[in-house]
Amino acid sequence: MRVWVLIVALLLPNVGGWLSSISVMGQVSRPDGDSWYDTINKPSWTPPNWVFGPAWTVFYTMIGYSSYLVYRDGGGFTEKSQFPLTLYLIHLFVNWTWTPVFFGLHKLGLALLHIVILDILAVGCAISFYMVNRWAAGLFLPYIAWSIFATCLTATLWHLN
Image 1 (cartoon, one colour):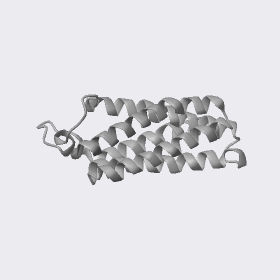
Image 2 (cartoon, one colour; image 1 turned 135 degrees about the horizontal axis):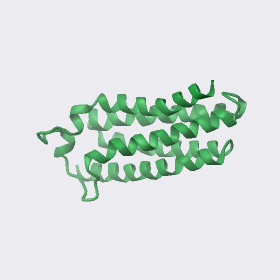
Image 3 (cartoon, rainbow, N blue to C red; image 1 turned 90 degrees about the vertical axis):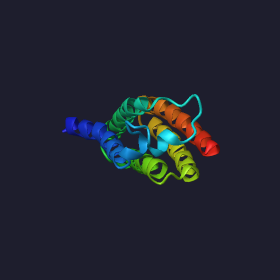
């Protein structure tokens, strides 16, 4: 039974992220370099487009495993794990919806507000996960660092455009 919980925990953030990305596929980058994102002003420290897919896959897998540890050590979806896992699911929804706001709607200011809320939720997840499993909280830290980097990038893009 637990192997299925682990598989779902690992797949859920990744599948949501992939679906979110697929929804705006042509807006991110095109071979002819004529997508919206390719044409906006970017800071020199912007990572190349190919970095984002592998990076998000690693981070989604880490936080997925983190949620599994909370589920396992909390005894399932019980009083001990209910708040952390609910917060995690809300956080995932906010994460997945940032991509369409930024790349689909091209609303940089709204995307900045969106990602700041995401950062707050991610920190809240790490803190609430810590109460159940310290390793689960630790697995969230690289994701939080990446999210803060993405927040800085979003703020800079909003400023430049």
